[in-house]
Length: 202
Image (tube, rainbow, N blue to C red; front, side, top):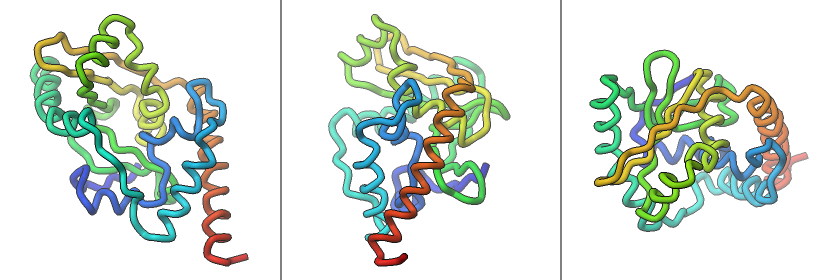
């Protein structure tokens, strides 16, 4: 694993993500069952376009996303206090020196774990409390983080002030990881071919 310790959300962090599939977008490549998604082509074209313009596509931040950014530090402090650990914040992680794909976990824990923080809006949080579907809603992202970092588990934390936080530990799903990596290899190959076509290269 190669780690670039730039602050998440900054321009430098965004530049490192240009034209690269990242764990938060793996759900546009594979379904929770490891099959190719209907969003595959659009995501591929988006990343190919980014490579040509040299920037990330402008992304809209809704209220929930903005709120999540503001609450993340509080949620991380809660996790550290509750479990008596220190969360190592990182910028972006690449699986290897090829830098074909990446992940940006909200923290690394010791030598074996990762932390992913979600600060959802109230109805979403209540849904997680009632239905217990937090980990499944983010399966591709969580497994993607494990693929990139090589770690054994990731804790996903859903945090909303005044409600009981939810922490779910997700371990490596070997069959899914195999399917995910295979699809990522194909995706990156198609991405390079598409970029070459757009540049008029043979």
